[in-house]
Length: 355
Image (cartoon, rainbow, N blue to C red):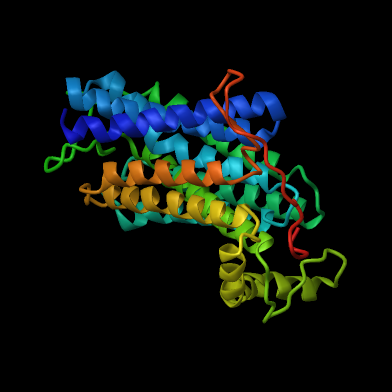
């Protein structure tokens, strides 16, 4: 069996097992983020399975359409949305709002950087930017008032983009042979699709990948022993100008405090006193970052690491989720009573006021 079949096949298998495990945990614990992540990993599995089948039997139009929607458009957005629900009780909504706005801005600027490739996009880049800006503002406002409904605002964007992508995909015709591949590596690309649909890829990928990565780092910061070098406050009760100043310096303060806290976190890790979320979320952050980088390289013509990046990504994501007590209090064969690791208990409080 060639690596072109084996790597995406293993990726699809791991992602499918992961999706089933998350769904099993959701049925037991009823946490929204588990269900949303299960949906995201299902899309991941389907997209990778399409690549494995195509490597074995060849591409066709139906397989290509399915791959593009599940693998290229939906996966990252839904995984990032799961992070939003996980951190819905925290101030992470500000970071998610930033992810939405940056995704909209990048989507708007992409046709200006590549005008010939997106000549048919029309006014859609501006519409995507406006939609992203409105959603980002709504999420930020809900977070400011400490309203735990902000993940549902984020869900409107992800679900809306999903519905739009389906509508666009089923109303377009793809020229023969019904798919496009990189001539050097055989990796599928989106070059035969209209710009209106292709622009949903950076919109969903930037929002989702950034949210997943930043959410993991945010969780690490919340649950690690901290050394505060720079102080800040996101208390909604402070004067408006003071709040805006603190909001502006918060990313800088968090980064500085995170770096200053690493020695203490390493000591706690070596002595077994660190919260499980810290190593878990670091694995998740790296697992989200690797396929994002290789996928971005694929879109700019460098396809050599595409499959390897996805495989490493799902392995690290799975490892991170398994380490985290928050997601898996016990590990068992999905939908059976067979327990592979018994339930663990751990303090759940963050070590600061970032909530």
